[in-house]
Length: 263
Image (cartoon, rainbow, N blue to C red; front, side, top):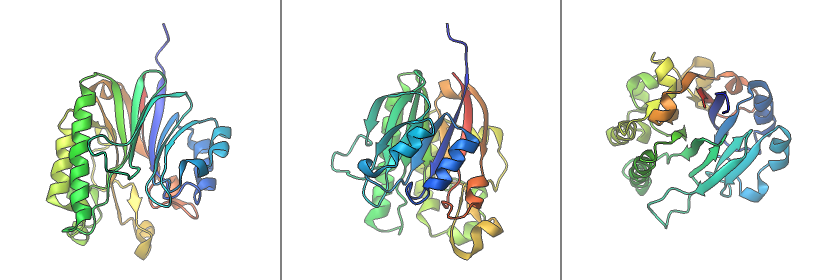
């Protein structure tokens, strides 16, 4: 029987994997996560920098799209049973969801939830419908009692404590009552927010806009999450935000959120 081992999982919206490749490779070497859920890779599958990331020690699964969106899973173990696309709307061609099994027992999903701005348009309607589909899919998956983590850029600011100034964001799709209610409904399926399990304090951020010196002023928001099934939550050992990548030159506007679980 294999002894339990601790696995470090991170979610990271890289805002173009090709444009940020030197930063991504440096972070993979320094932080050495076992599993990485990437969002906004902004490239088709054939143009993903596969060789460079494989040389860093990772297996790769991608679901890309030209210039927009795109998600990927990187893992130090083989990635099995890969599924691309969020069920529920066969007409949806946006590359925003994929899942796979890593380390033989852990089911992970990389999520790039729609932004939804501006509110009052079809983009906001698409966001809310996408969240309904995500809830239905997670609900179905939870019946399998798997060790599962749904990680990614959820494009929701769940509470006023998750943003530097709620008033500045009051008309944004990320903070609308409908967005928040649907995010809560997903959590209330029985999911545990890995980061908040260890760090319940307000004003812990994973995103800082490029504009108006937001990073330097710490004018950020928390929109990247690792949501754990009950079986994964029981195995949580640690979680945090790695702010170091956001301080680098040519950084993504997001920084990684991570957790450790024992499998």
